Amino acid sequence: MSDIAVDRSYYSPLADSIAAWQRDYTSGPLTEDEFHQFFEDGFVLKHDLIKRDQLASVISSIEGLVDELAQNLYRADKIQDLHENDDFYKRLTAIEAQFPGACVLLHKNGVLPAAIASLWSNETLISIAQQLLGRDIAGHPVWNLRTKVPNQEQATVPWHQDTACNISYFILHLLSTSLYLDLDKECWNILQV
Image 1 (cartoon, rainbow, N blue to C red):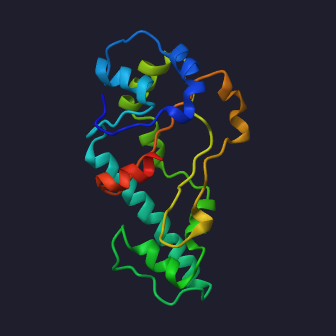
Image 2 (cartoon, rainbow, N blue to C red):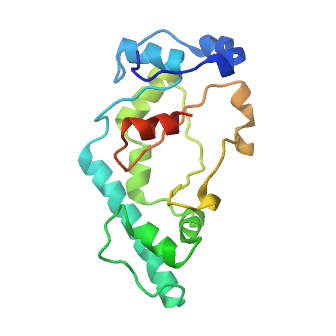
């Protein structure tokens, strides 16, 4: 089981539904312990699941989206510095400092780069979904790049249920979140809440 403590007391009424969704273990990318952890804890941390070159491709595509946004804002005289020498982890924050709301524009862009589509259809991720859900799976058609920069409340999205997912009371949904930053244990505990 996970070494991260999980407080289940706040969702105890859901425990029976979650237990009903559990299927028999079948071999795949998740070990039997990881499989059972998912149904007990509601999550599994699986390290080095995706090849670094695929993640590098995704990061490069996001850099392209950020560059396009910077160029558009620069041409519109909304920013004075493109921050082309800032790295992946700092550039959008620097652009946001010049033009508050830039990260929201990036989120609303609605462009799904090919590298992210490729990640979404990664065979290992699909195999895990099939291990947990069975062979009959489908991906939700909504995709968002949720950028997070300091002091930008508009980009903070509280828990919500998209209207397209109202059937969630009847079926198990998997949420895959890809983080492109290294997180220490303290940050993970914040995300877990």
